[in-house]
Amino acid sequence: MFSFNTSTTKEKVYNIWLNEKRIKEIDVKRISGLSNVYKALIKRNHLPSNTGYFIYKQEGFQTFLFNFNVDLVFVDANKNVIEILKNVKPNVITKRVKGTKFLYVFNNEFTKFNNVLIGSVFEHKRK
Image (cartoon, rainbow, N blue to C red; front, side, top):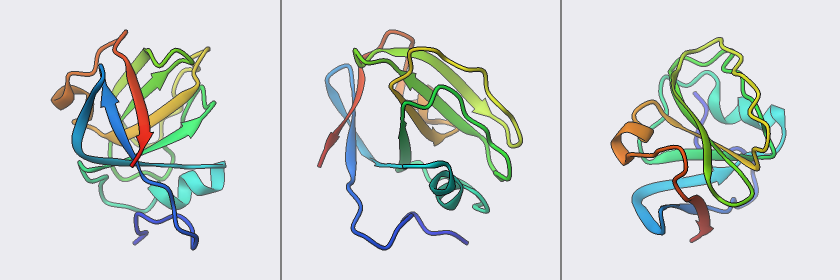
């Protein structure tokens, strides 16, 4: 089974902020490149609720070889949520969301539990 770490170098960990308030108990890491997406996410049984990832300038996503559902949050350059795809099942290619600067990947309860809505201010900040 793959661990949370996707490389041998020390990774930067970020906090998530929603409408200028830190969401406690969740950390995100950046994924660079398609191969690292799969290293981080495939062949896992689930994505823990305290774990998330973000990808820079990714306007769509595919969940091939995933074993769990995910929530996807698309954020523009102004840090506004422009699209939310909840409970995306394995083996799906999502629609393309133009204007996305960051795509966040969380477990399938994240957006509901944290009340993430279209238009929310959503960002990551270094720990």
